[in-house]
Image 1: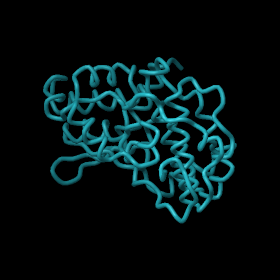
Image 2: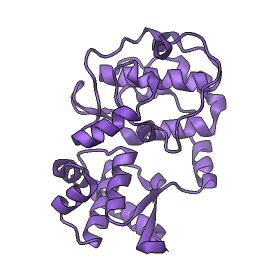
Image 3: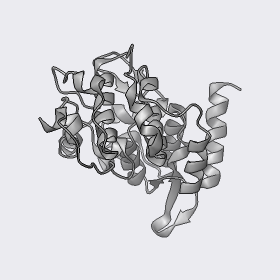
Image 4: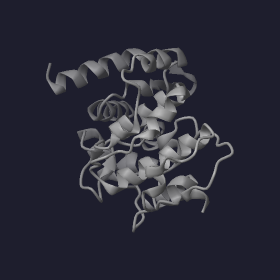
Length: 249
């Protein structure tokens, strides 16, 4: 089946999951977002159903028109918070699938998720591109549902990363996951240097200001600005007692 056919089939399955709730809202299951085209098709369907132009949606959601265009064209993989913000502006809400379904999906993941596998999950140029948010959030979801896999998942460094931003982002993630299990920060993560310049996803000045306020210390210490819920759909895991780390120095 062609990529276009796969996207259409994915969208048809998604439409079958839409159900009305108060205020004419719809429930859209985030776990159906398996690739960029499905996110773009979802947004385009929601926007046209609401009879909004791209410019009107941009004004309502405070998101750049170019960002919406790229998402709908499938050339930009949006963060969870950006996609949710856009869908809310059309009268829909982004929700996760039931926990049982997510656990079943996580249990079928073989081998267990590892941060090292995300070394090349980067889109665009090394400095100005962005992570493959779908792959990144999927790995985080699996590890939070199966914390027993975290020690193995964070032990190996992400070699041959396509971007220094990706390596720094994964180092921060390794530190947070280690702290959530009362583990020391892996050596490779401690040795990963902060970026020379601040990196953040593309967005309007207002959004970027909000992201700075919502950036966790592990990422801030590495000069990365990304809001917590773009990584952790239900908030970051709590941290326990831990030794010295980059974020605490």
